[in-house]
Amino acid sequence: MSFDRSIKIAPSILSADFANFGQEIQAIEAQGCDWVHVDVMDGHFVPNLTFGPPLCAAIRPHIKTVMDVHLMISPVDPYIEAFAEAGADVITAHLEAGPHIHRTLQAIRANGAKAGLAINPGSGIDDVEYLLDMVDLICVMTVNPGFGGQKFIHSQIDKVKKLRAMIGDRPVHIEIDGGITPETAPLMAAAGADVLVAGSAVFKGGSVENPGVYGENIRAIRDAAEGARKAA
Image 1 (cartoon, rainbow, N blue to C red):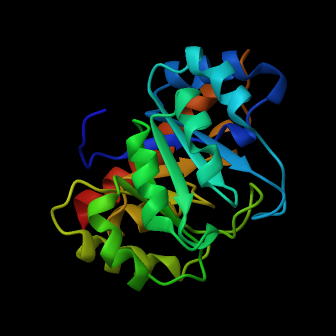
Image 2 (image 1 turned 30 degrees about the vertical axis):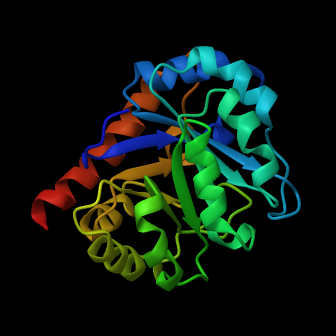
């Protein structure tokens, strides 16, 4: 998994057909997605329950790109090894999920995955400064985590600009998760983001039987983001 700052579209399988994950993943990859985003929720740190390590292990053989696992769980540390063994390329933990995030990031890397750090909309970036050399990705939540289909929180644009300046030339991705559409993607790309998570905006209107719609949706988000970056 080499580093570059090109725009990457990471569809969230939270919006896919749960009964058909294998074919859904094959369809979005065939239609041009760059990463596959897996939203793990525990019903405790966030008000929803989704997937665990067995699901990640089951879908791993279908993923040819990057398996991007976002842990919206607390505590995190007891589960890192299991998600790494399930095949996660990137494991992202929340700044707010526990008191020892530095240790958590160390553990992710020690288990062979890229380390991601997620920040909720209400969190500032001061605490990120001393973690920048521990992370491969920072995920800025542009909705409150827990459910798909929420409205984009515009105050996070300024946060991303400040974060991009703070990162400098370090090889750290800025990922945006929440409310990404062809209308909001350009705002984040111009601010400095390079990985865009999109759920309903990718999967709406399409299906395994009609995957071309996925491709149209992915291209619309990518084109809008790349256009904004060129104009910036």
